[in-house]
Length: 506
Image 1 (cartoon, rainbow, N blue to C red):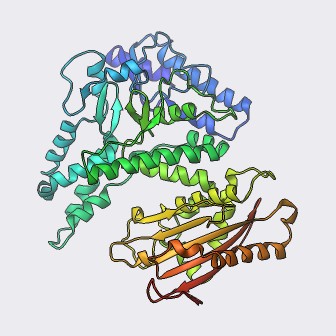
Image 2 (cartoon, rainbow, N blue to C red; image 1 turned 180 degrees about the vertical axis):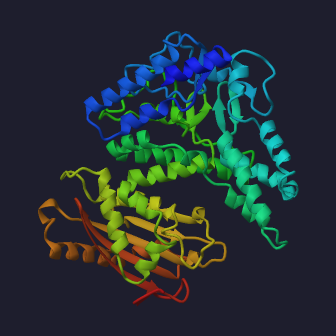
Image 3 (cartoon, one colour; image 1 turned 180 degrees about the horizontal axis):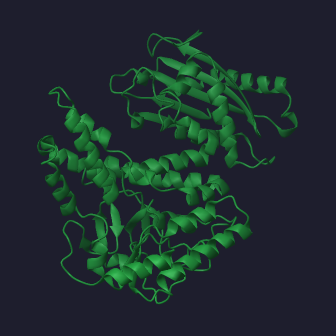
């Protein structure tokens, strides 16, 4: 079929340049397919034959340009083409990065590779020009252009393309401006909150068009290691953004190290975890960008949303992570306030995926991973205060003690808000281990959980909740794939008054 099409084009227009976009998609699809090894090899053979027909055995071809070439090989067979010139969009070597002094504020005026790579993705001037041209379609943009540019910069800027810093994602920027114009034109009321509309239109666009399947496959193999890595990346991004908002002169936090990527091309089917290899995978896939010659970081808020979901998958497992976004805001606290622990039990069970079924794991291991689970779901609003629908997730502060075996509470959490409602609530959790030989003894599970609950009261573990007027104590008996939780609720009139047990905080 392609040969017939090629002959027709050449006969009608002469020899041509062939552009092939999303080159990697069919190879990734085959790699992730639940097929036998023989079927995958057969599919890869068909793809190789197709590209060979288009690029190698094509007498009408002047040149071919392949876009979206994934740099981590998914097959040993290559593209079927000869004389390939590799033009890197991602700087990989120290020398490439340290010489990258070109700003993406203006179009490049030179020639050669720099001129070519600058034509990919948008620079700041091009984004400003797009916004200026959209005023003819949507005049209301003119009054809010600086605010809109700030949102675009926060959500879609930050990429390091070729030797250019500060590139914008073209698909996301275009989609955002189009969506914003449509919504603003439909909302002609003078009472319309324009800034709220702009903030709502700023959401994920590009990341919804692709797949994180290759990364997810690595997560499912190495959940504990990925949890630690994702925490570092998320924390660095959040701290950097807080520094930008609070004090422009503050130093940025250290970013995750990654030197040369040439030695990090991992075998995606291997069982051994490689942090540099996984970082290289994420870098080439567009979910990280270069921060310096020796480190990488999350580029912007759109990709940050992806990492939140990947972090939840690593901590909770695929099924629970998918379900966590479906819970109502404050669902966990709402249930616990009524004396129920079903969601808590599900979260505790889901956190077991980062531990193997081995006797050597103690209460501290379970406490640590359970705390990670709570932190993960809090980012989706499950642990925010139900009375405060506008509270920001950054106002919810988990205090992870993890002092198992040291005579202190295992896990403490307090909620904060500007109007001091959520600040009145705290949670104290004490873990007790269920030994493997007691896994099927339900009576023992209950006794262990109640022991943890009594320990919180007897040892005054609530003392760190000095500003809280409402609190919840939870005793959790936890072991390999088994959990039992009990709780008690307390309220007091002021921080100087004694606690009184209550049946419900609703």
